[in-house]
Amino acid sequence: MRFIIQLITLLTLLGAASNSPIHQQEDPSNAISEQQFQVSSNEGSSQDFVEEIVEEFKEESYEDSFSESETLELKDKLRQVFDLDDAVLFQKEPLQKSSAPEYMLDLYRQSSDLESGVSKQANPYNANIIRSFQNQGYGEMKHFWFDVEKLNKTQDPNMKLVGAEFHIYKHVKKQLSSADDLFQFVQVQLYRVTRHARSQLVMIDSRVLSTHGSGWEIFNIPDVVSYWLANPDDNLGLVIIATGLDGKELDGSHVIELVTSSKAKKQPILVAFADDRNNTDSQELREFDPLDSLMAAVPDEASSTNHSRTRRSATNENRAASPPSTNEKRPFATRGARNCERLPMYVDFAEIGWSGWIISPTGYNAYYCKGECPFPLSQMHRPSNHATVQSIVHAIGSHDPSPPRPCCVPDRLYSINLLYFDQSGDVILKQYEDMVAASCGCH
Image 1 (cartoon, helix red, strand yellow):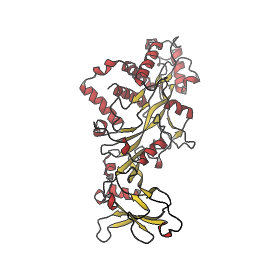
Image 2: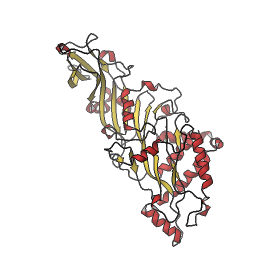
Image 3: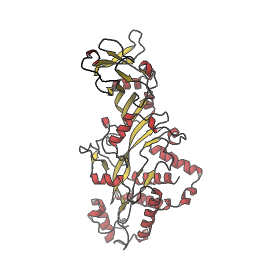
Image 4: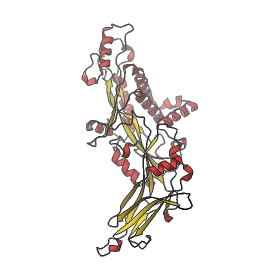
């Protein structure tokens, strides 16, 4: 329960910038991505509220102060932010993570920092939601059916399909000699099943494959999936036919086979690439300092194994070092007060009961901002021009009522990638924006 409070704290902290435009671009140097924004000075009250909750969070009895209805409300808030169905969020039976498609695991490793989960490069097709569909057809008969109707069930009007692929693995049983000319290549044809009596199979793609080496064969089928989404009753699946150069269909006697079993590690899957961001948010990922990515991946405290103790000790240190907020009218910093800084706030998915369906990461360091914004502001406080003016007006007291001092808030946020099972066992890779405070400043 206490980690649910922690997540709500994080969301409140990051929500301060939710109305600011976010620009992204692909990082050619493969550095971790950032999302940078400016926070206006009137958001200080949200930051103060967040700091109070973070300090109170360390008390073990804090969770007992919530009624059952309030607890349900907090859980529902988490569900909304992570855009998850209740069946996924609170399922009791853990899923076997080893059953996740190999492609989805590889994609997560390529696009995410493995320690922190922070997004480090754009996904294929610049998608922020990638969903894999398990085959529910008769694979042994080379028939594949995927329940793509799930894509239609989303209520988000911004959701759009940006790509779709059918993946099937080609396995070579033995190496051939150059004399086996008849078996050097095979022809593979992919069909869409239709209801028409005359032509029940419509060819989508045809290609000739070499038998020298195993590997994935990927067929781009965005038009087919789009058609199925528009005409759900016409989704009768796919059929794949592989023949040798002699025209005979491949069977167990051939040196090559297509892996069609849904239980195999290299199982055939359909992968849909979607984007639910609006036009402002769907820009390419912006690059940032690789040093910041290292800071995001490694907890600030010495021990990364006891996150609860780390959080409490960090909170206690800052509570003792920070002066009470009643000294607001004093223009200069209180002696002994700590300046605006970024502090660790680790979110452990196992402790909030999510480890049964989240594949990676096991948790992440969200961080939060805390500290004084003393007058005069220096560049180390990363102030905006507005914050600099506000601090001067506050110091000289020329305005009635006097504006407050600028507040310590996140001025850059990172995205994280989450790889998880949905309620039907399909695997989804989703990018959640503005989940990690990358740096703090006075605004």
